Length: 201
Image 1 (spheres, rainbow, N blue to C red):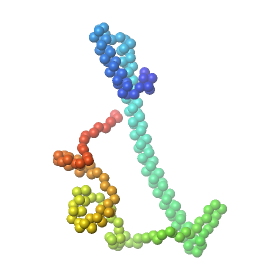
Image 2 (image 1 turned 60 degrees about the vertical axis):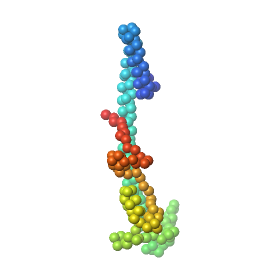
Image 3 (image 1 turned 180 degrees about the vertical axis):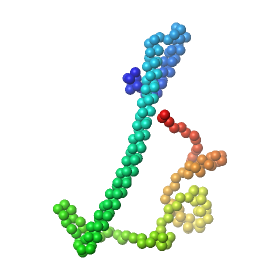
Image 4 (image 1 turned 45 degrees about the vertical axis):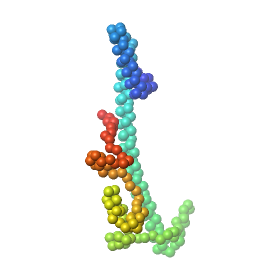
């Protein structure tokens, strides 16, 4: 029985059970009852079928637990990475303050040299963000496609091109698609269907 579980897939076991049932039915019709050998093989495959289902269930549960663990670890390691990055920034700022306050260009140790290096480009430091005019901000918005098309239809051609040039990305609005289909409207490039999922209980 163990060899059946290990060497056969669930589909193969199921097919073999169908074949055995047909053989049993034929023997009952021709001989009045099935042979013990045939019944024994049928019981073995029934047992193997149950064991195979349980193995698949255990595998799915184990993979779900592993997925959850990996996601938890990713979040934990991401937090540790951010904490480490903050420590690096604080340490660099402290050393930079030390060097600049003493008008030093660098300090050296047996392995490392800590040196003041001028940035390759200017950087901006925002002192009062609420006071910053909108003209000097980048705006990210999320709007429905229908509203986007309506806005474009009201704009002069030059402004329409400028706004389209700012377009970054879009993704399907599944709720809008389902709502349209429920109103018996056809949505090109999409369909709505009720799928299935596997539940392990």
